[in-house]
Length: 70
Image 1 (tube, rainbow, N blue to C red):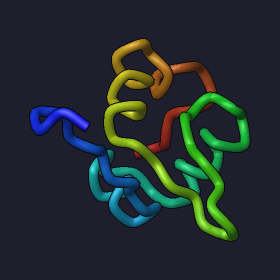
Image 2: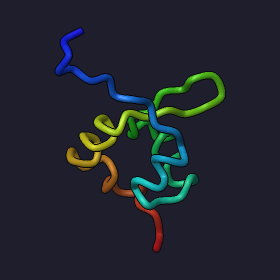
Image 3: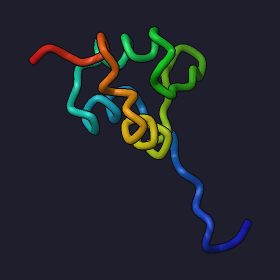
Image 4: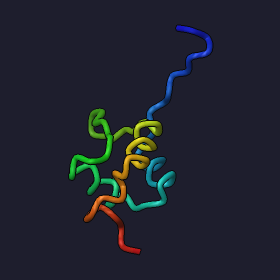
């Protein structure tokens, strides 16, 4: 591996909810709707921040029915 390449770490559900400032239920709803990029590792959901950022940039979090009521 090139020394300039870095390996992105997996993020936990808690990290993602804090990062996006949304509830766990909202993230699970996005996953269940098969819109949010998430990976099941055993019983845990894991995320790549870069994938989530790209999903947000492409409008994934703003799809009708996927926003959290505030």
